[in-house]
Length: 284
Image (cartoon, rainbow, N blue to C red):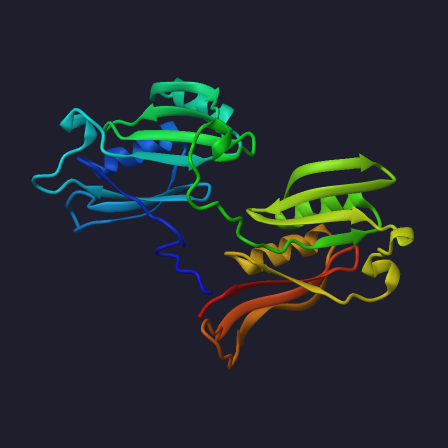
């Protein structure tokens, strides 16, 4: 499936009304840490709308039309927006010090979320939250009509000769973050994420049937990493110690199926542990 940089979300994109969009952009940036993607409007006139993001949360800002009103003007709210964050504690401290009206202090809820509530300059209610525990709804009194199903996903487990060295390489090469770490220097297992794309690594253990491609002399799997700027990520990986197999260039394909890919940028490299990575971006 291709991505669209004008609408970079696949699920839900809320449109939020403000009397002054430019003022709202500045406030949301300073107080909640949002980043502006783009804005639009007639030349010389007020900003009509904008798109902003915080982590994976994307929002549209829209100037109030005649007859429209914000929660602050109405005197009551009509909805609440929840943004999931990894470090909600730091976000809470920043928002409070920046002047946000805190309406719900940071705490852990009975349904397993660590969260706080705040109102913005137009009275919109926001919840900022992090999953603290996995809690079934019936444990806190809810009646479950349709059980929530986890979306299937595949995360590769990479066998490497030196687990700690591999962690450092992937941090430098792909800007990976460590989600969890287990074991000592001689045997390491870890979970990592490249801006949401999760994978695992473990020190090779021949006794348990695992050996990295560097030791085996070949690999049977290649890893496709799709990013916004393949050339930059490719160059970072080479600077961190990867070996180039092919540069990042445009490729055209004649594919079939419900979601055909006809054009993409892609380059290939081998990391210091023998794993082959294809760094790319679907263009069409």
